[in-house]
Amino acid sequence: MKVAFLFPGQGAQKVGMGKELHESSEAARSAFERADQALKDSLSTLIFEGPGEDLTLTANTQPSILTVSTAALWAFQDKCDIEPDFVAGHSLGEFSALVAARAMTFEDAVRTTRRRGQLMQDAVPAGQGAMAAVMKLDAAVIEEVCRLESSDGVVSPANFNSPEQIVISGDKDAVARASAELKKRGGRVIPLKVSAPFHCTLMEPAARGLDAFLEDIALAPPRVPVVSNVEAAPNRDPSRIRELLVKQVTSPVRWTESMKTLLSEGVDRFVEFGPGNVLAGLLRKIDPQAKVVSVQAPENVEDAIRMLEANS
Image (cartoon, rainbow, N blue to C red; front, side, top):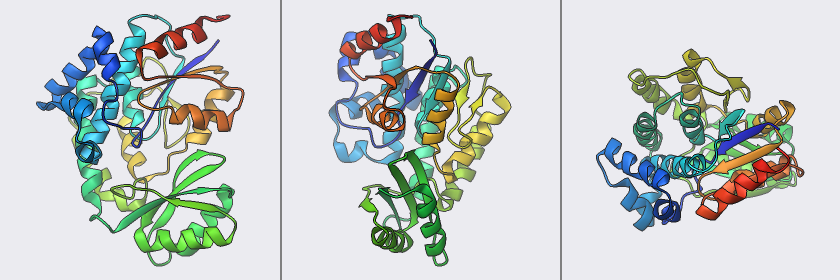
């Protein structure tokens, strides 16, 4: 048996997430307390009580999801000593994966994701960028259309989420033109409610800012390989972590390839830690036979333990 721990990214947030974990697990509760101390702010109150419009601000969303994901992980680890063979996280979730691999301290990850969120929000003026999810078209077609429509403005694939879903990102007008052309070619296109066009070259100012911030963050050798979004390949070299995190800001999230990498490495059980079950859903589209449990509440901890201990 090989196991991978997965961690979600932005978009999974909701007011009240992680509250049951906080109430039922001392280990989970410590994550919220330590996040508040790291930021010198009551992030936990915002997570549990809102308001929602403040939680969805990128500078708040990113450390909030990291905190809930880590709380779920620690609640699980408090009851089960099974360690993963690999970890991976979707976009922001890569920081949660680095915490799980003990390559970055939780406090440093909280502070870094707060800064990352601020930088990404500030990189493009509000209303100038856009993102859209594209279904029912091959990646090659989507990439071709983005190239054709990027002569006047930026538009490119941002998230290769599954064989059935690819997200595009860039300047508002360029994304609109690409969306119209993709519809003509038989695609289904859904505009996304996002505060900035993530994972495209418009995020270069944010990448530079994150690079500077990471100068003061200590990075240790990961105890287990971390599959990076940029390369969709396992990494255990601490000297490469900063480079991969900086490149990730402007590069597409290669999630489909990342999951195929894990499957090719023999991973046969997956546990998603954090709010929602988006990653479990994407994994089932990549491999319908995959065994996966999402841990976001106390009862899910027992579900994950049962899956991992069955025929182990």
